[in-house]
Amino acid sequence: RIMASILRVNTITDASSNNSVATSVLFNGSAKSWVNSDGDASTPAARDSYNVSSVTDSETGKGIFTLTSNMTNDDFATTAGGSTELVALNRNTTSWSNSTSQYGFVTYKTDGDAVFDFDQVLCVVHGDLA
Image (cartoon, rainbow, N blue to C red):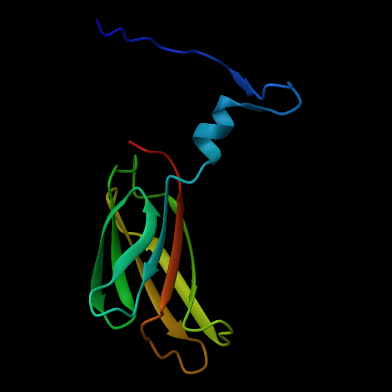
């Protein structure tokens, strides 16, 4: 016999009661998606991720991450970073929300705005899941 139940709490506390957090912080403050992607592979792919179902290579230095679970709206926040080597100067990664189901990124050199593929593309999403 399978039993379903709901656990309703306002605060979660560790076993020693030294650390606690309101459940609203967990829902509103946690990343809803993150990805570490190989951006310069012939077929870009996520090395590791949470809530990312696919990576699409749009063109050199540009791509789209598709979410496994949609966001409530397309106003969610994205943060991006990445590099082409261990010490990368004059490099930048920008990301933006496209729709409730995906977000894009572009990687480029800031000295000349040359768009090119990074070895590592890192993105994080914050917002509300649908």
